[in-house]
Image (cartoon, rainbow, N blue to C red; front, side, top):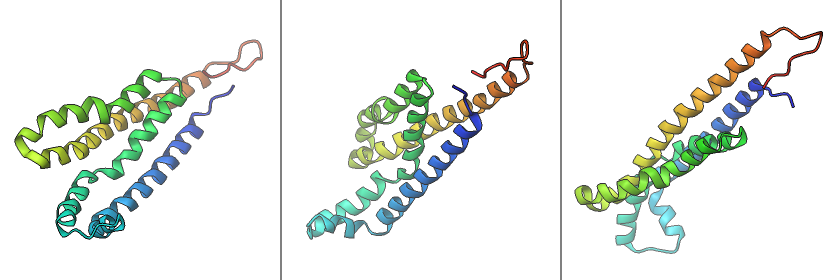
Length: 160
């Protein structure tokens, strides 16, 4: 099977753009209409809406960054890097979020609980984004090195 790093890069960039556009659109709706979203669930309780609106906005503040982490985990799984895929998949909800749920509430009470999600999302975004960027750059370099190798006895050397 012939690997095509440029096609992988193009597909990844396309998926990242689509994921970011979708999550950003949802984020924008949540930021602009939190009370109306809560009311969709049948609640007209003013106390619930007063608490829930800013809570939902804060809790989902980093929503546009989620697509990068999800796609990075899928990318690493697809290219056979199971360990990287597992670490990225666990990073946001397990490795970062759970410790933040223990650390933040004593200092910030309920705000600490709500802040744990956007902080863990942004941290996982940075980890997965950098890791993905480094791996995709290596993908292109491996292809160039193999292309520079001359054919052996008239046979093409297959890139790996």
